[in-house]
Image 1 (tube, rainbow, N blue to C red):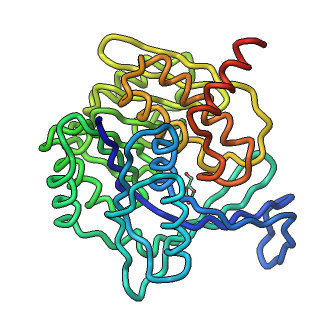
Image 2 (cartoon, rainbow, N blue to C red; image 1 turned 60 degrees about the vertical axis):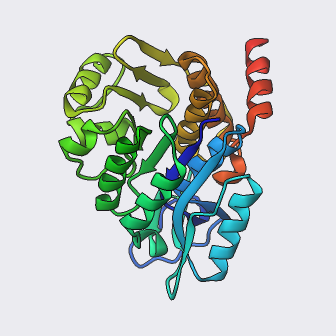
Length: 307
Ligand code: RIB
């Protein structure tokens, strides 16, 4: 059975629900507070593992109590944690998430996520991954590590997937080694300097293709998503949901989509399941805990189809 290896961030999310952002010099009392596991890499690993795919997390946490909690949670979602390192005298990654109306604003303190050793990543992938396995990463760890690890994954014959979040300066060599690029609206704007919508989607994909990736997915929030490879363009509409917290919805989409692809699902159906999973994630506070498993997605889609 094929496996997914996720290299990325592991954070503890501190979520504050507020009526409005504080003004300069102002102290504001929040309405609600939760501390829940997150981090783009860890969320995507959880999303894939919850669909029943063998998923390995490569990342770091500090030698603090949060690190214990973050690893325990990942294990509880069946994510394999053998390649997570504890970094001495360093704090685990933290994210302060301000939830205002239906939007979120995130400030990250990377902590242990900033300390990576490419030789270790190379060893883990070369000793454990096989041709056809998926290598998935994001941009919440040092860029240099992302670039080198994508190259290593390609040399092993893995399918390399980059969720370019948050967007950083990517070079053509790295993008040419990316088999699937996943970006949202603002990341697309940063990458190709185009405000993408359904009227210029072809232009967006052709600009991205010129940069290297042959297959890409552009997610447009409540406006749905577009998938493009050399043969087809697929639009997937979103399902209406009660927004509680949008944190981790994009991560749910990416992890779930890849899980179904590796399980052999047809692309359109994998996209549909990923979209359903993302819609369900925003109905609950938090990221990892809110991501649905296979059974939950199946019954959600069944309900939607019978509406
Ligand atoms: O994508 C959502 C994630 O971004 C949060 O869980 C937070 O940790 C930040 O990394």
